[in-house]
Image 1 (spheres, helix red, strand yellow):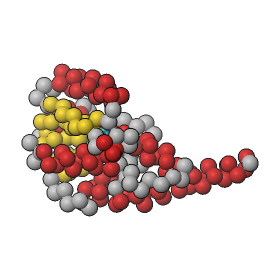
Image 2 (cartoon, protein in one colour):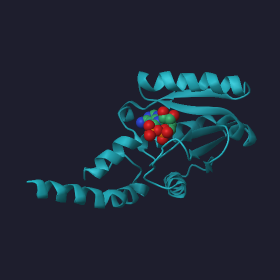
Image 3 (cartoon, rainbow, N blue to C red):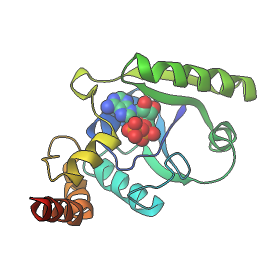
Length: 174
Ligand code: ADP
């Protein structure tokens, strides 16, 4: 059975990777779908996000994982066209649940043949999100352990200028 795992992955975190690895054990194929529209102003382009996930996946020999960008139309239609019968969603906290539950019901209404399956986060990543990673990187904090090693440099260098500027502004104000 093929499972689709959609998200913005801006950038991929170890929380995402944990869900990908666990899904890859449950399903014959996992299709990671990188969505264009969920973040209005992404830090990484669609191509960069796909490339970073591919490198992280390759580093772990996950042979049944494919990464694609998903730019137009409904997720359920894209999933069905790709042969996926299942949509995977990761749940971190009750706050994720309300929105994801609504989306699951909506998607089932649109396409009853595609089921949404929820995987509970690994406890050590329950606080981790792409936004947290970006915020810490922007402020010059240590994001080692938050993102896969293969993409650590990309994320650090994307925000290196930001914290240097933030620091300079602070010095100016002092
Ligand atoms: P975010 O910016 O919040 O990381 P994404 O749209 O990239 O959001 O997330 C894609 C999917 O991965 C969603 O189903 C989300 O709930 C799940 N997810 C994100 N972070 C984690 C985590 N730390 N643990 C488990 N699931 C996660």
